[in-house]
Length: 194
Length: 165
Image (tube, rainbow over the protein chains, first blue to last red):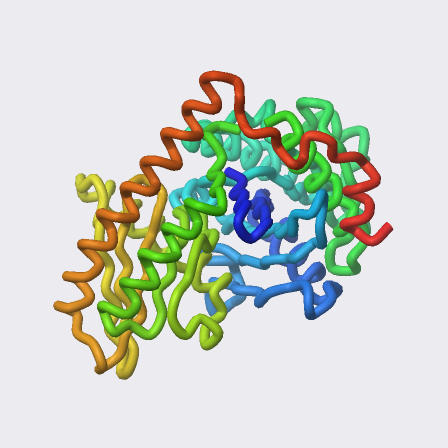
């Protein structure tokens, strides 16, 4: 749910990174945090366990600049990927404007990817959204691993609505901004239709 | 989008700001924040600069959402009030209507009883404004005469520019 404040001429959009455990959701937003101009980014809040696994969410506010005289701010969230944190995942999707699905390219994680998309569909539905219409980007992460499945193979298994696909190596920053941009484009275009 | 967006016009924003400004004074609070349940700050009053408001809004919403989940687990509709007591500062969090969260930070210059009392009154006033905002949005949506979105003519170039291309 976008929040438009006409008084301060600000618009806030919430984008959620979703995907199976250890697929690189936190790595994506950490990289954005490190690269972003310190004036434009807020604090990166990570609610993680002692072993750095996301417990509840990571949160990064980003000032993007202005469009049509309005300050555009993105709030980036990640969900905890581990299966048993499902209740938390559902909460974080509340009021989201767009989803970035981070898929793990390793062949052994393909089932986890598929399960996570199904889980996303269920949780979106419970929050009143439809996975077929919400702004959505598919990121194929960890393209540099030797055991990576081919892109056409992943496309066949994971792509379901002609969504933009971005190949990425998030820990090196490859494809990270491109992914965010593809999501931002859809979210802002959605406002146009609103 | 599943629900109506929250759109605040200048006059509505001013009213909200007035109410929480008054609350901040009447409750002898350090800071008062009004945030929405999705984690976005709506308005603030008091010594706002002393706190990272964006993180506070997001964490408060996360906290409320988690507590909401707990409430449902034990068969409650919601817990409308959360209170965190610190050594010096305390945090009073309460739900306003369907989408608002009121956060009051106070120290020994105030008391839980006073804060509760003042929050009760302010919540009622805030609720009225939220209802007005919702009714207006509903009306605009029904009649199709919705205020023209400033983004109705957004272009690819606008988006490229945001990313510095």
